[in-house]
Image (cartoon, rainbow, N blue to C red):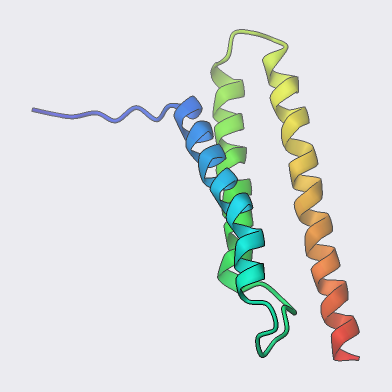
Length: 106
């Protein structure tokens, strides 16, 4: 018996959104729990920051696949217009982290 797995972009998007929500809800609590440690809340762990990039990549492929198979024209620009601010936010957040690290090094 052969089992075929069909990758559904909606399921990927819903799963990524759920994980992203958990990640975003957990972040403040992790920083509160680590208040006044040795680093004094200077930075998040690098593995925690890479989760943001994983969500960005997963959501990109989910939107890409959804826009290729959708029959509704208005869905395509709407999905991309909702993803672009997320990309811009992540780029801005990366620039702020880099700037803060440079200030602390000086």
